[in-house]
Length: 370
Image (cartoon, rainbow, N blue to C red; front, side):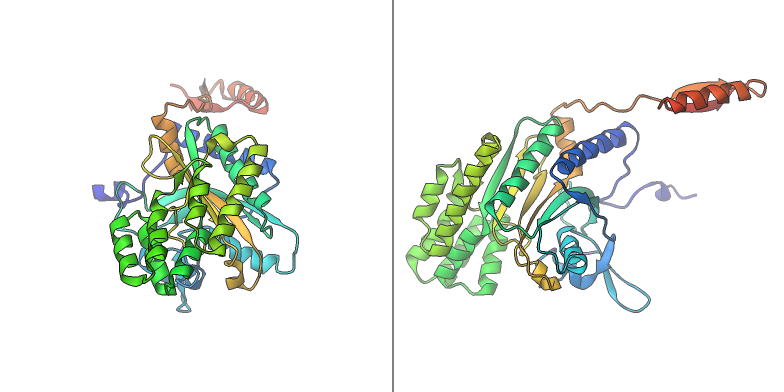
């Protein structure tokens, strides 16, 4: 047998033993917090039709999708992201519902990228979606839930950075950028390619003040005080309204007593173009990427025929586990099972004891002796 069969492809890995036990425990803790907020579990297929994740939806680029065909010739993809699937489900099963819908989910996502930089192509994600509530209170509920999830895992040193896509879109509108130019600038800013972003602004924006406001975005990060500076550069009503919403959001987060974990970053954008308002990311040390990301996507459901606002978040479990390990957070694992050895003559007696122990919630392994 070739030893290559013992190895996994690049970008995927096996998880077993105590590591798997700790991962399951962390997932259970997160699920327990989400359940306290009234979110109900939902499961969607591992693969969907290609159009669920198309460019028009604003999700993962086509070249990064795992694509294949069914026997009818339809193009299918392994899900790279849960949010479009959640939007599809809400539109399919709750088309006529006017009350808020709360989903929670868990599963693996798949991204076919060559630029790994230590990242996995298959990762476990857990998340929650609140559909049908466009209020600031819904934004605050989601962010407070994120903070409580992280605290439940044992993390103490982390920060939730909050941005606002509407602030950026208002500046772009004022600057007269086309939709294509706005998307290009959004992609550059989302990966922090500031030099290329400034070059695009210089090329495309004729109004010097409008261009300066766009360039200033990258510097607008910090505590609540940064919102006043951001508002000073808001040269239009759309961007000013976005700042006012962030002020209101902060006021509600104070009522949750979680404001100390919050900061603001007006230059923070996402590669997912379906985000429309408040967006947020959770950072902690010991890991090279965000451990939680989310935001508001008020236009996405209309792509599936249901006009409803929505907001959600996703926990990247693999990155979270890396942070937990780096910060030496103790995640207790289940005790090793009790081993009971039997012989041909003692099997009945030992089996009876094993059944009794299992009835008392004790794990037991039967082992044949010599």
